[in-house]
Length: 260
Image 1 (tube, rainbow, N blue to C red):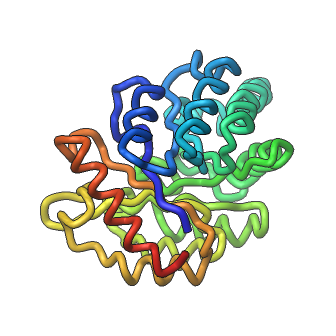
Image 2: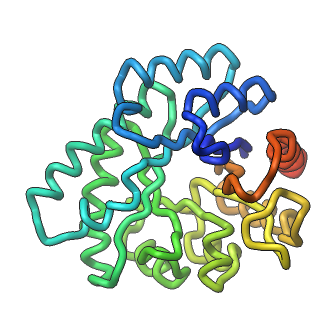
């Protein structure tokens, strides 16, 4: 079980600057949150790969800037757009091959066009990702179909081995559920976690500012997938200084030590 920090925590700082700031603060693992098309260029990816290598960092995952328009790209009735979108997402997978990332975070569709339709479209992207050695994983997001644990349980049953899941703890709280409900729903398909603390002060807090049951969470995660990656993802209004962010990362590292 590895622990890291998302470059999105430092948004709107450019991704390469965010990655460098994490690196010089001894963060050993980082999720890359891409913010625009030009960052998908191979030359840019190689630059980030060199930075990762220089500081002996790993990158388990990539988050796309196109997540907000995935309903339009993948879940409309316009087949040509779907074909073009699959072709476009090859750019992400090529980027990931360069930086060494294996998990692609997918928000998916909105509305309710039915689980079978959702699974049919997701499967196309999942299988495409596998051609590049990439696992496309659905994230629970309150504004998307994936917001409920019941939905995750149902599509997991439909998709079987062609399914992976990203659990976002704060999004689970925002949807009126617990992260544990999503662990139960996805089971061994949980591949990746976006984690933060939560409590009376909010649903996206630095570690130690809330009352989330981290010990029980990591114990359960370890039984489901001991190789899962756990990424600290705080919104930039959730903390005030880089030292506060790094402190949360260091606390998480100690929490997962028993499972390494």
